[in-house]
Length: 268
Image 1: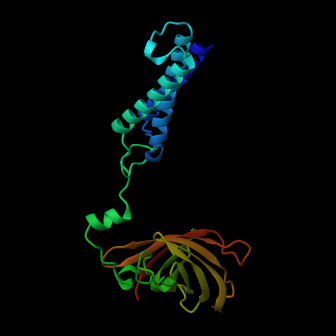
Image 2: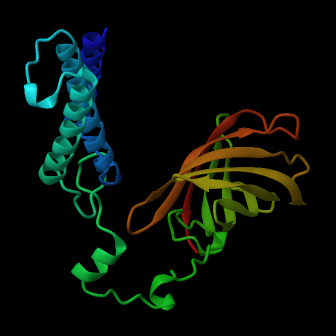
Image 3: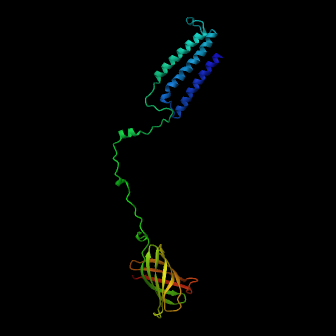
C-alpha cells in the first residue's frame, strides 16, 4: 500500500505538469504570482513519492544504509524532507520569479499601455472645437434644390389637334415649384379666334415628362367647354425647347370627346 501511494502521488504530479505543458502549447503560461506554488507542488510531489517508496523499501529490507539506523519511518521522513528541500531550491534557482510577467493568458503581443504610447509617440495637440465640429448643414427648400429638375416655367404656344380634325391654338402658361406645376391654358379656335376657352391647370414634371390636367374654367366664349389631361415629353434642341405628346378627355368632368396630339414650343 505504501508503494502504491508513492506511485499514485508521482503519477498525479506527472499529470499535473503534463497539463501545464499542454496549456502552454495553446498559449497559456503559469501566472508569475503562482510560480512559487508550482515549485511547491513539484517539490511536495517528489518528496512524498520518495518518502513512500523509501519507507516501503526500508520495511522490506531492500534499503541497506546502516548509518541511518533500522527505523524505516525515520529513514522515510529524513529522505522525503531532504528531497523537498533539494527540489525546492533547484526549482527556485532554475525558474526564478520574472518581473511584470502575466500568467495563464494568451501569449500574443499585448497592446501597449497608455503610458507606453505617451513615451514612444510625440505628444498630440488636440484640435480646437472649431476644426472638429462640422459646419452646419442647411437643408435647401424645394425652390433652392439644384436644377436636377429642368425649369419649364414660362409661356408655351402650339397646336391642339383632335382626331376628328379640329385644330386650336393652345397657350400654356406654367408656374413651377420643384416638380409641381400650376398655371392656365387657353384654347383658341383657329377658324374663329373669338371662340376661346381659358382654364386652370395643375400637374407635375419630372424625368422630362409633364403630366397636367385642366380642372376649372376661367373664361368660355364657346358654350361647349370641356376638360382635357395630357402627357408631354420635354426636349431641348439648343435653339428652342418643346413639349409634345398626346391629350385625352377627362372622364366624368365635362369630358372632351376623343383624344389627339398637343405640340408646344416655349416663347417666354
